[in-house]
Image (cartoon, rainbow, N blue to C red; front, side, top):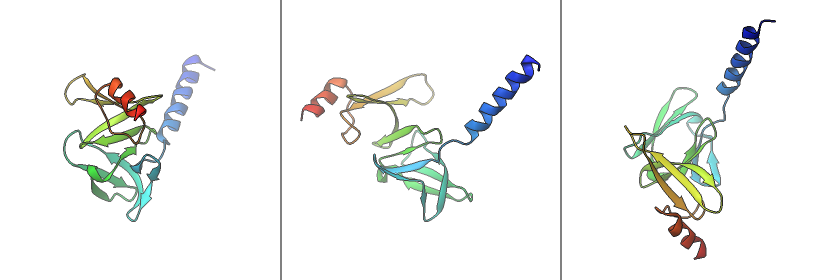
Length: 136
């Protein structure tokens, strides 16, 4: 078989697999995932950079707004975790001895970084403060 055909086949197969990602979930705490509620199964979660609301889209096309303050965070279709703090959405980047969070600032290539001792601890601006949280 032709090399181009093989490469195209592999690419299409990988693209097909990526379409079947994980189910998005709302997180009311780091351990409590909700993939479906009384409105149906969640298809997509939209989190605008500004504002107090998240938009939840269900499989049947219904849309529902939720206050960001009511949630700890959410999971997207790729399985990435996000945490909400002060109506700002931070992506959980790393969970080692200290949890690291990033948030891309709209319209720029800059990131706002936060840290915490664990997933339950409040977000702080420096690793040093996060280590102090661990000692408490």
